[in-house]
Length: 486
Ligand code: GAP
Image 1 (cartoon, rainbow, N blue to C red):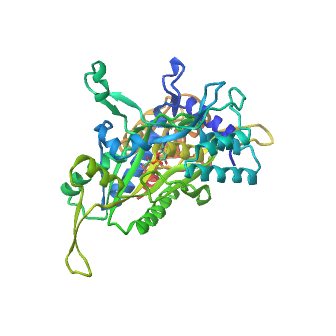
Image 2: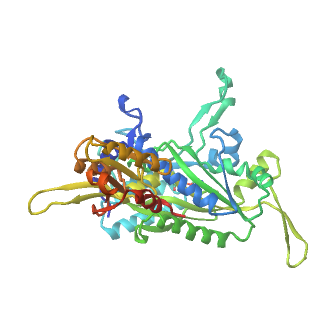
Image 3: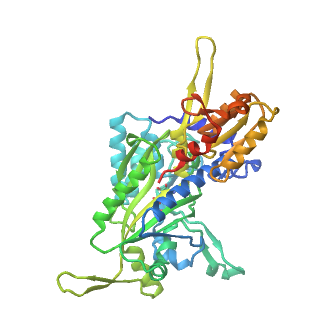
């Protein structure tokens, strides 16, 4: 169930506890651009590392690369982004505010009863599929959909706007500037396509094989809102899987299942996800779907799985004049001879890293009422799976004296090469526990006077808040066991 308040609480929590800040905040911020603070950066890195390992280490036929953000301008002509990477937009003549047509209609649909909303969205999808811009405008006008700023229904016609950022490359002089125009990549995938043969040849890769990459992408989103869900600068984790033409249906199904299993391995239950098949396919795809997660703002896309045919490689071959083909040594069962040269087909999995951070945060965020008959109490806790938590272990000497900090420091030294640990002496133990709950630390270990006598410590579990006494020597193994996932 969509809940804007929960989102607002998550945003405030992320700011208060050093996860995510508005970019350039001291200058009043930059719209739809965000910075990750000390705990956000750790969380994001843990997600990225988990994805990378799942792809490149757990699949023997997938390798990872790291291509540049800047690419030759012709790449974006060949890929179709110069001509097609645009969204239908509409401007309100009174407020001058520009909206993505689908977002405007979707926001209005959220205010309707379920049946009316679904009818409206179906009509919208079918008009979008036909690029029927007049039809979309009349749909907006007929439903009396208003601009949230001016409150009027005074709309321009629907037009397409390209979402790529451009900049100049090298020295720029006057009229020659257009020759130097290059784009900030709107997807990481093209860095993989243009390196397809480099990787295949140097890695002696045999089809089917994949190339994975994590990196920044940039889109001049017109309606950029909802926190890190839709940003102008964001990170993607993409994998292109190169296959024999004709096998795309089975690989598409394989990757749908594999990726959904990965999502569930984040500790998120099945019912929080659903597949959404695309009605209007992107310019490169013959089949496509999204994995949607039930965010506090409702079910929204977190990952796309696209059967991209040979669209990209074929176009790069044509525009570059360089052959981008694979020689298949496997024998054709009919002729008994090698299958020979072909341009591979591609099934792509493309997941937004920032959106995954938002998903993991949304799933972990809990406001718990701990009141008893005697006293009111509550806590905010982030119940991350331990392997994703920014800090795994807090080491807390009960007091700053009597040799307890020294024992605590020894424990820190033995654990910190393996997992991110946090050491703190200040404040009461109760306050220190709550601060660790707020950043999602699964284990807190308290060193007290009994530790000196019997070499045991109190371990306190974030989710249950239960405490138990265990040998000091058992702490490291216990924490490490909880963060190994493969
Ligand atoms: N190469 C295919 C591709 O880029 P996409 O569906 O446009 O496909 C893939 O993007 C994923 O990238 C999305 O599922 C989403 O998670 C993420 N993404 C796209 N635009 C984004 C934005 N403006 N802010 C944050 N994440 C975004």
